[in-house]
Image 1 (cartoon, rainbow, N blue to C red):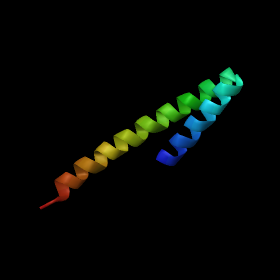
Image 2 (cartoon, one colour; image 1 turned 180 degrees about the horizontal axis):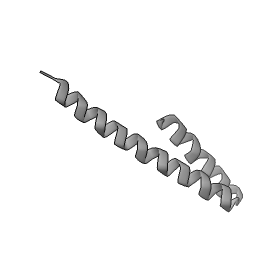
Image 3 (cartoon, one colour; image 1 turned 30 degrees about the vertical axis):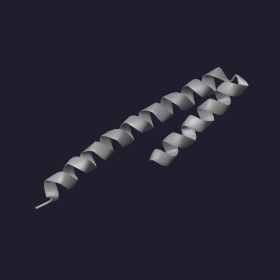
Image 4 (cartoon, rainbow, N blue to C red; image 1 turned 90 degrees about the horizontal axis):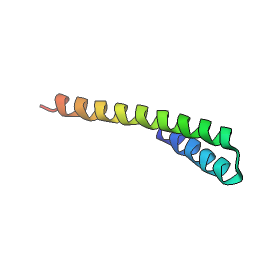
Length: 54
């Protein structure tokens, strides 16, 4: 999932450089959403890892 976040971030940066405002905004918002989903899943997996240790 982090891979997709980076891909959408790169697409947003390239689109912003070439002046495609709508595409850049859409790709940036998708990247932001995916990043927060990744962050939540990472925190959940950390908590589950600490809980499962004996």
